Image 1 (cartoon, rainbow, N blue to C red):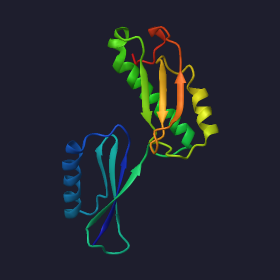
Image 2: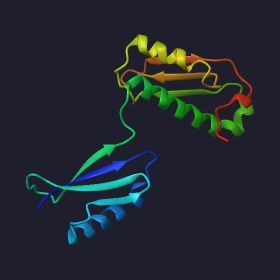
Image 3: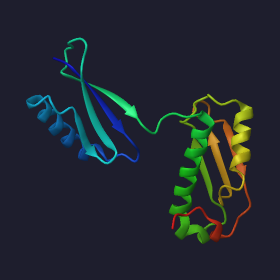
Length: 164
């Protein structure tokens, strides 16, 4: 008998050392009682088992369901930029006065060529006014060419994106 194991996850995800023993326990429990097919491992990680239509060499085959995936690519790029900028701004908060400029340079692993130059210009226009860093640059992961380069003047820290 073979089983497809759909594992649903949301970010941020717990580390594997924490997840792995709990997943293993649930699968061992399932072996002894196949009536329970849904397991809630964590707030953001669940398993659901289905009998496979064909027997395979392995008893379990994992099928990922990334609940955070999807959407229009430019919206995902914008969401990713918001998260990265807020995180960077929060991390440097205590050191802001120590240096006159702060840049954030990111490598595009979200759209990977799915956006045109015109769409990147729209992302850059959207980015204006969304941060208080001196420069935000997004590089093409294939050739390190800048896709977005948004330079802004320094704003007061009170307008920062730092979380409360």
